[in-house]
Length: 168
Image (cartoon, rainbow, N blue to C red):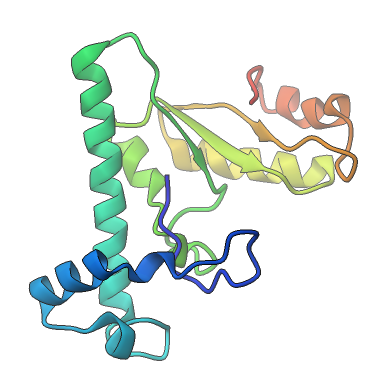
């Protein structure tokens, strides 16, 4: 659950997903700022305000999903695949995924940090960081598998070292 606003031209499905007409018109109506000329990149004066607006919107969507799930079935667990760094980290700001606020606000049951970096030592670092940021919320390791990644056994070693038994 995120809304990237960085250039995704190298992605498999490149699109200017941030700048949909409805996003532009809604933001402009709320702020009198035109995204494409004033807020579409870090060098623009409206960049930080636009990031905050999007981050708040993504967080509100997460909150509404959690409340909707709870309203129908209180036993269903709501989890989020999250980046192991907080939304205040400069590398994460443009992803607009303030998952630490979701945990603190109580509307994310499980944080699933995407521990996709190769070596097990990197996974351990990501898990330590994620556990600290998740507060009282459970952390489930999100692991990448495939020929370019270490074996699942190698990836589970740092998980067990952090007392994390569950993984996705």
